[in-house]
Image (tube, rainbow, N blue to C red; front, top):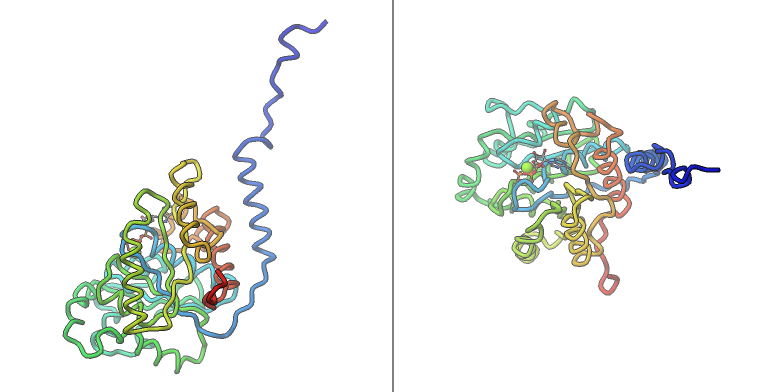
Length: 310
Ligand SMILES: Nc1ncnc2c1ncn2[C@@H]1O[C@H](COP(=O)(O)OP(=O)(O)OP(=O)(O)O)[C@@H](O)[C@H]1O
Ligand SMILES: [Mg+2]
């Protein structure tokens, strides 16, 4: 006869059923899918500005990691660091001390972009136009300059016209403001990419940002459109993150990428090694999510939704 407790005994603990095991097998499947993913580059140069006037939402992290992820599937990419903080230059391992020619010299002294571009140690196809501390004064210095909103566009057009090795993507990392530096980025770009942090207040300020974009479309750059929204720092364990993600998808069903960037220690510690997370830990959850986002960006291409299609 069985002991009464015996039949009620819980099944022995199996690692295969644990949430961690499920997460790992999910990651392995996604990794495999990525390794098999075929992407076709069009040969056109797509210029995306990564903007959001809210601070700390993941603009720089997104700009450098999407850039590295695009390079990992064969693209040639330039990151323009348009933030005086110089975080993108740091993350790409590119020197940007005050004595180094930088995007400041391009905007204020009309240096050719080719003279200041450096190659990231991560890849010969990953280029960076660094920012230095001088850029902090550029916002005010630009006010009195001729064609102050077009300075970056003119420099970029000249560079792209003369560049032997055509670029597939240019990503512009903006500062957290809607001043003249960001307006230069909006004027130079075709596409706007907005990273949204999955936290409370995520959508606050977005209407102001989109209002500025409409003004730019009207007066400075009719080609600019919101092509991409990326949800960042997602913590699936919180209901708040899920709610924010749902709300953003409801508002922008065509723009939000399926890929979502998880909150991850590997992502946040990579810049302290002067690396993107793609180089630092290619198989980590954060790197995989950025690689998925990059593949999606290439596949979606830049064609705006036609009227009535959405
Ligand atoms: N997916 C992530 N997981 C964990 N930490 C992250 C993630 N993305 C960004 N961070 C961290 O959040 C902070 C803000 O990110 P980031 O610098 O990219 O934002 P930002 O929008 O460029 O900020 P700013 O407005 O100051 O330019 C950084 O410390 C970064 O390392
Ligand atoms: Mg930044």
